[in-house]
Length: 369
Image (cartoon, rainbow, N blue to C red; front, top):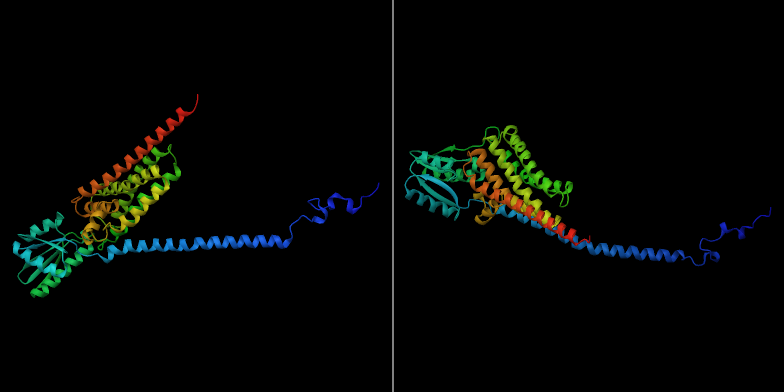
């Protein structure tokens, strides 16, 4: 059998069939193209880097402003206190306090100490002063707000030194013995907000689209009920941070979480993830920073305090304080706010459901038979 020569063997020919592979690009040309692509990619990345740094810096600065301004401007703002004595005594004390901090205090006179104590329990005032003989009794309610109570105690000491009498402190509504500083109440702020954010994100991911909308709403309500009772049990029986009726406290927490989750779901149903993200950012930063849960609403400037109490985080905190320490006194306002948010969320979801049902029906009619 005749053997093939190596040069006639097609397996030894260049892949492109040309003589000596003359049509292949020289290695130098490949390297040049590669370097140009790398350079272009680096320049494009550099152009994105500076805007990214600017945006991240802006976000961080905004966070500092949102959380820092309430703290920097915190202090008594029309904080209601009482004094035992005639109205003239209240006027005199009010003028004296205005010299210390203008518009910081609102002073009301009461005929006796029992009336003052009743006003504290009714949440008409945050504390007060009862002069008598060689002593000045200073009434506070730390459960109504640590910062406010500390400020009232400070005023009482200053008045006692001025009058040359002794101070007798009396805490009318204290925190429970297991948590005398109310640390558990403050710690509940973030979980209450996360309790509105977490189910919204989870339900959207697990039950997406129009078909899952009703499941999302049902799941949000069930989660709010379950989480409310679990969190209330931890706060009351685990931490010992509140003293109120367990069921009432739990339902209040459930309402607070539903007032966050349902609007979040409605925003996502109408506007997608941008709507959900915007709602979460507003509640996490603005609502949380203005909630006044740790200090009480009177520790924030008037407009900020009002805005904070009209948002679910602030209303939830006030409702928890009312149910946990004051037998529900002062709960009506927060309940109304939270119920309004929850109903608004349900309406948003209902509107999204009907709109998508209408769109689906229209598409079905448009298809030829």
